[in-house]
Figure 1 (cartoon, rainbow, N blue to C red):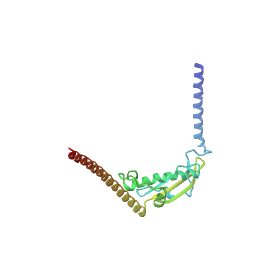
Figure 2 (cartoon, helix red, strand yellow):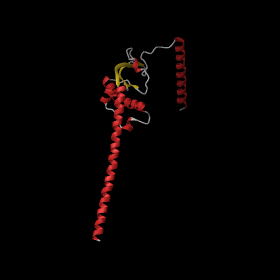
Figure 3 (spheres, rainbow, N blue to C red):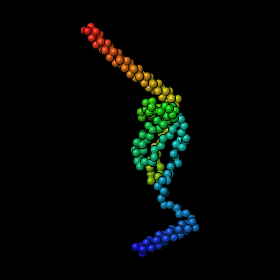
Figure 4 (cartoon, helix red, strand yellow):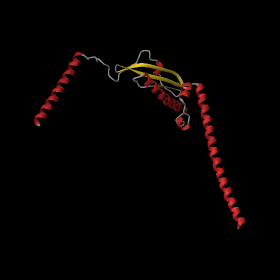
Length: 193
């Protein structure tokens, strides 16, 4: 057993000496170039639009898919990202206390495309030397979109008020029916008694 440990220790020490010797040789000879780029290296094409790099604000957001193996995967990922981006944009525009989920202001895909999409991009990039696909969309709240959003919020507020009034009226009607039935039975007892 001891002999095995001695051999393992010697092998480990030799490995460390060899690797440190190689590292010293690389420093002397200069860095070797990689034949393949690292797997996490992203190489974008030169014709990639500049609007993808712009910063987001309360009236604008750019959503970009992760690199995908196929164009179809990138397009499908973008459909999901548009919904998420629209919710974040509306949250930012309306304020923290007024989220789309709380108000019920959830836009359909066609409403997002018609109201918020300013421009879209589909392209390729290299990820670690492998061609991949990406999609990007710029979502913007224009003055027309703002009017439509405010109109929808007002409609939702009116619908909410109508629902509350109907609920209160229904409760009052039930109370009146119960009171009328009790009064009718009480009157019958008095007449029979």
